[in-house]
Image 1 (spheres, rainbow, N blue to C red):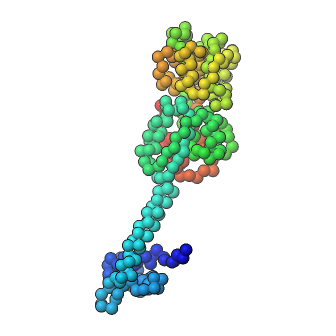
Image 2: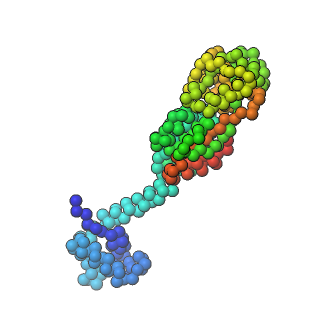
Image 3: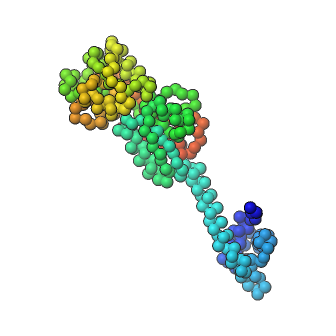
Length: 299
């Protein structure tokens, strides 16, 4: 397809002159001298092949060709201006689409606040939210399937950057009828011999190992009776009497009538929640999301 090479400055000069219908005023408005304006109009007329203005009557008026070109010229200038503005806003992280992975337990703590803060700052950014455990989030980041991960116990992975945003203690998760549920603080050693409900190691290796470490430091190897992929399911299985658990303190927000959450002793272990992204990703949406995440106080 043949495309005429029309310079934007020629179209703009034409549009301004069509409004002013006076070379002197149009040149002043454009911030140039009158001869360069006349040259631009002549070049445009040469490309069209017909005069765009009639100057013979002592006045400047649009010709039929000029009337035909003017709406298209204005549309072109508006589209370019709109495209430049859209490109600027995208470059500054004000528009676009960001894909966010998150661990389900974070819906009980920091996730709503972070998403709310980000939405308030950048309402035109489309967010795609995916619920994923830690290991799948790490894989999805490497595969460019998500842009940001909100995960628990981020692994030390080459190519990824993790910024901690929350540190939680662990609590004991017990059926309400359990003898230890009457205590305010439960010694970890008192859980020896109890069947445990835990996350599989594959879904979150570090937090799984940390829980086992708590038990081993208390002098016993936990007997794992059931596995559950999400902390909500862990609580439900504990309520059903299938065992006890040790879990991040945010699990207390899962309010099940048949479950008691108690502080543990010792309580020195912590689990970390972090924002994770690819270190070489220069997407401005990520930088803006990090600003929102940093602005939200831990809950």
